[in-house]
Image (cartoon, rainbow over all chains, first blue to last red; front, side):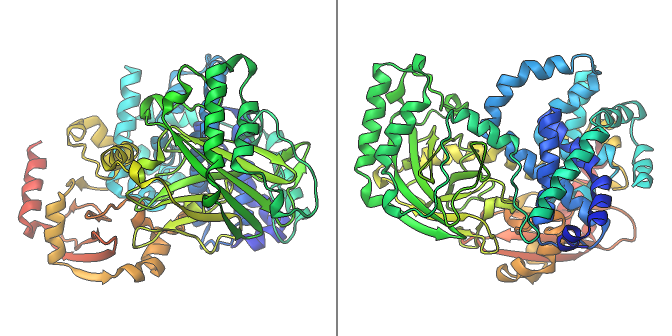
Length: 159
Length: 438
């Protein structure tokens, strides 16, 4: 599969979109912490997909590309000064909107950025640490460290 | 994937694992929004069958527009280089107008005037570059002591100031498009960003964002002017090359469309088909301060270095955590030291040299997998360091293969492969014993 094919076959693109939009939204939301920005991210990532000139060897390859691209896209946003300023301004709103949600939901949203993707991939998607390392292009030891630290953070907060 | 999830779930504490999954489950987009976004995307494809232009404005640009206060977009046709305003004019015009009236005072006005005057002396620094349908003019930079805006809480100050507190630098560029800038209700489709990069460091890692820079834009007569403000005096980096990239923020390429080559130089990614201009800028050599520059970079890299050299032996003693992470990876033997790895390299086979690495299947397929087009080794490997691709696992009757990548002081990378039983390695045997004792 490649982007050229997706650009010319609406039904194929619809299938791909329906298959992965939820994943992209969840990742984006975990970074951006609000619905509007997460939806914007979904649009941007799929446009990047259509704009790219990549060949995808398999559905798993495509999914992995989307996960990494979404992660990079969101990281670009949250590290940008515009976002930092916006986050300060929006902080109260976000807290209020999620105040009725359970504790774990808050904790996942507040995890350090670098842990979010490994945690999502491990706990939600069911990848193992080796697969995550391969997809994210990081040493496996790093992924395990991320997961350990994230787990520890969550555990400490829950106690 | 559900099979994988079940497999992993069996070895995790069920309550917390389930709660984490439930937390992500709640992050759900409703069907109506999902359909609307699909329609938006497809409309784009339909109207631009050859090149997908991103004409929907994303939040970033909206926020940028809000911060920039006023964005004047005029739909002109052809414009000449001579129409470009000077750095002095732009600084005075834009910067003054950026700040709300209540924030202005005499000290501030004097500071702006002083900096604008400095830009007036920078005519010799002006450089022009054409790139993928754009013409970018670098109008110079000015570094000042941050006391110039003492007691001023200007709109452009960024959150990094308190942490860095190393002066202030302003850079200005002007961007022209061969096609003119598109606009939609006063907002530009394009999202230009400029960023300095430092010789020897990945562009995704050491850049304007990590240095705590902020920027503001103004389009005047179809020329997009950008002022970037750094809460750091860039002159401190004068003992190494400093680059200025001007690019489209939405460029899907990693590293913003720039690469770190094997000599530590920053180069344009030639495969990028959108704006990715690159200047090597001259700064005041007398301002070089290696100690301060290294400290700033170290601060930026510190977090990443901790990750890549992850030594969490204390955390490994947490049985619960260990158990939860130890899915199908068997027993994790832990990490080797740099000396141990360097020793291992002597017993290993050289399998890829630097130049081959960039085009290799290993570089493009394994680590280029999942959209990481740039060479993965350069992501996390620093000069003089060895790293390895796979951890060591204690498992009977299995051939152990370690890949080690070494980057020498000339920034060349070489990949080595060691095959054998790690238990024959004394240091690794010791490590195994230590792990068992724990």
